[in-house]
Length: 185
Ligand code: CTP
Ligand code: MG
Image 1: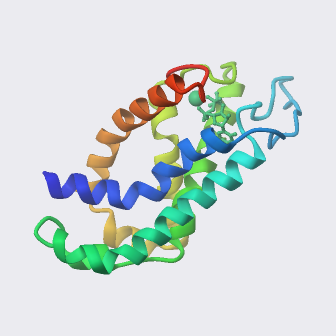
Image 2: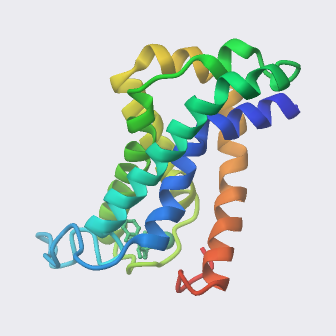
């Protein structure tokens, strides 16, 4: 149990960090430049900014770099929980595809949210919580399938799907409390 949790969070960390980092650091020019889609609703909305995307991705990459750097020294201590090989198996492609895929997934979700008539920030259960997981996985599978398959076993995939909505709601609640998010979801 504990090994699955540790490994799931470890593997997802660069993707997990990207979202709250975008929320903390994002502001200014929206990616869709304020433009509407053919349905006269915003393409993405003011909640998706260039700054949020870039700085959110960078923070994820930074965390991933720290993880790759730390792995050799902490792997022996975690060997009882997770196979050492797992922690030491780094991918410099996944380093980028996990956080960037996460924020791309978030953009895709916002695009569909706008098409369905949800305002920026409106809650869309499941989609809001799993968009970035699916984005991170899809982009990583596409660009480094071998690393993805080697690390994301069915057990880990299921663990991530179960724990992500809980972690996401918890961080969003903190973001709301510290005034970085207008709504607690
Ligand atoms: N954010 C950003 N740029 C991004 C993603 C997020 O600047 N690419 C910031 C925005 O300030 C956004 C906040 O992070 O309001 C929270 O992100 P999220 O919940 O994904 O956006 P929402 O405002 O809820 O918009 P949407 O309804 O489109 O999901
Ligand atoms: Mg939201």
